[in-house]
Length: 114
Length: 120
Image 1: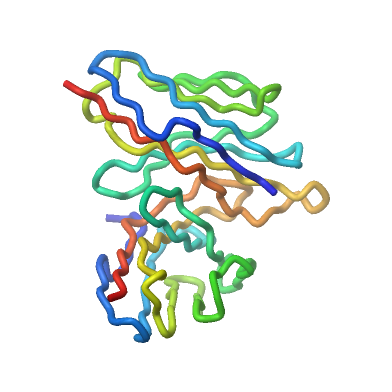
Image 2: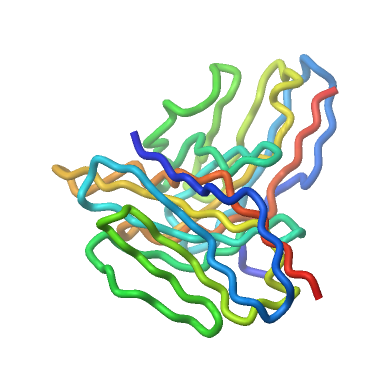
């Protein structure tokens, strides 16, 4: 399967713990995006990378959120000191670098903070 | 700031009926892109269409058609002869382009979605 993959698919954690999610984009896609989706809402943009450069991160929800894409391939999203309000689906997407191409989404990681 | 409004929260139709999903957007830019995505019960967002702001031609793809009207800032989606497999949440999204650099943040701003239920 050559689509966007995310790991884990589900994560249950206790409040205050740190969590890290991984995203593997479609191999030829240079751009990678992270979104968050809560129940009954559309996805909300968090950050994006062009190759290894993080070009937009002002929408990360707080300084507890950080993302990396060290070699321009896979990416990780980390949430430190999780709170119950962080419970959501975290979506990763990738696209080609040319213009405003369509973004292809992965299956998401569902985070539950107890 | 850009904004996408999908006023219909939920729609139910009987199989084989036609259904139109509304999308109204707000943007200050003259260059932008509009998208529709489908999110079936399995959860994974599926890309349906991308349209740039300079192309107002309507598009048809099988049972799907899209009507883009810049004058009313709308990009509506019609499913003809709906089927049970069309049951999903449908999202309209907007991406802006910086007028000066021609670049953009490439982020998608999504509406809240319309849940379509097709009843057999």
